[in-house]
Length: 143
Image (tube, rainbow, N blue to C red; front, side):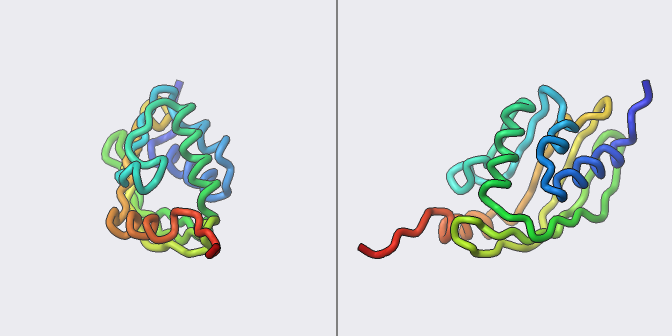
């Protein structure tokens, strides 16, 4: 059985993710995959390393619950064997605070047998962690 190229798999995942179709995006993830979001787990509940499709799915759903995606544009995709590297231009609105977070981040995805087996997501860690310290906690009105 011939599988799609690694870039084709990543493009399909990204298209589903950009559309907000989390279930379809997760269908491209291997059962024992690893997703490493290189952000402190203290700053983001889904930060750090997550193992297994079910847990990755829960983390990705949490991301969509926490942030409205205004822009998610992958670009400069390059493949070296099974490894696909690319950048993403993004703009998210933090649902709880209404504040926007925008910029670029880097992704490295490994594809085997037509499924994503490992994803490493690299943000400007200091920027994202500062944003979450400022806006991540629900603000209470003065008593």
